[in-house]
Structure formats: C-alpha cells, structure tokens
Length: 136
Image 1 (tube, helix red, strand yellow):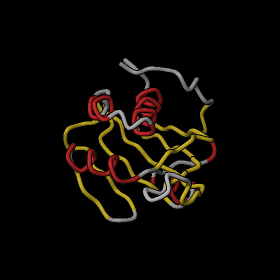
Image 2 (cartoon, rainbow, N blue to C red):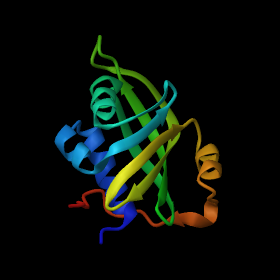
Image 3 (spheres, rainbow, N blue to C red):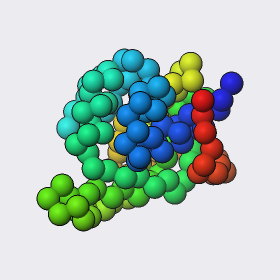
C-alpha cells in the first residue's frame, strides 16, 4: 500500500505538470474540490479546473494524520495573456485519501486554517519525501 503522502505528492506533481490522465488516475471519480470559487465534484470539474487555473504549487511543509494530508505551499499563477507570473501567494491545501486515490482537495488561504479544518497541529508535521517519488 502506498502512503497517503506519496499519493498526494504524485497528485500535486500531476496537477503542476497538467498531466490530466495521471491526475484523473490518482483521483476518485467523485473527487470533491473546494476552493475560493466554491465546491464541486467529479473528474469533469477537475479537468476544467486544471485547464483554467494556471496554478503551480511548490510544497514547503507536510502534515499528516490518518487519511488526511495538509501541505503548506507557495502558489504561482500564470497569466494567460502574457504567459508571465500574474500573482504569487503562500497558501495551504488539504487532501483526503481513500483506496489509493485523492477523494477531496481543499485550498486554504493559510496553513493555520488548513490545520484547524483537518484537526491537526504542528505535531503532525512529517519529514518531506523526495519530490520524484512516484505513486502507481
């Protein structure tokens, strides 16, 4: 069994690379996606979100408790008009994993909010695993 952190890391790498096939393989068909624009579910929404978001996330810290993983991240949004950086921000993402797939993804404005929503604390911080780890 692949650890939840490795599944999340592979999911995030696929999202950053806009590798839709890999992203969908790592996501439950009814994945729930929650962000600033609201809440939705399913592979169709995930496909649309990746196509329009222009977001690349780099992970700075990792937290885990049971099937829930929280990542402290730095986000970079690309401008569709100029292909340059439109904006940057520190943020956090919360993932739930079940049966080797991400079943829920939620983005937060800050790490404290994500940890609170996940019922976690600083004590749940995990050592980072190599960025090139692959979940199958």
